[in-house]
Length: 245
Image (tube, rainbow, N blue to C red):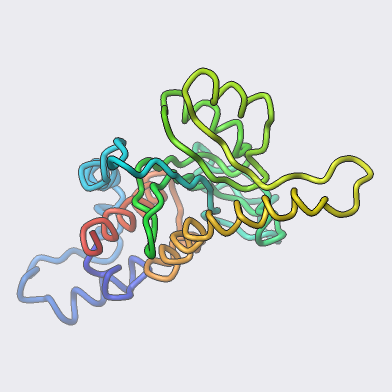
């Protein structure tokens, strides 16, 4: 975690950094190969640590607005996505609409409580394979949430589900309006509403950009195992929670 906080995003770079600057603290530092193996074995510990640092799922009183979105964690890019097999217990091929490309890897889903003038306060995080549809994940994942407004992108638009959330759990789901079949432009009221929803959810996009900037979490091409991928993801999330909480 310290190595990531210092801008060392690969295990080899972290090992070199410790050897060069912290040798007195770690006189029995193992070889890079054994160091890497030990990091992978710590994957469950990183998950547990992040769970302990994560803000609990209850909303702060008086603020019930939440933001929902996902981001790709790329183990193999478009050119290599068909042949990639690394960590196939967790990974598969999916499509990232924001990047306009296919990739092999996983998705990180986040539900955050909206805060004025800053990044959202993360309440829930979930990792799924890349092919998992965002709305399918959300319908299962958010089955217990109640009494909140959720702002999300078009991937979560489903009128029947939105009505069910409202009637059964007092959850208002707001998504941009989709064009109807044969419709080329939105009507003025729909365009205004969609713009308002997109503006409301900007900070969840900023949150994902912040994670990437601080940890390079989307660049997982050096990963060689499922344990390695879990350690890669949750060591970064735990570091952010610990150093930036």
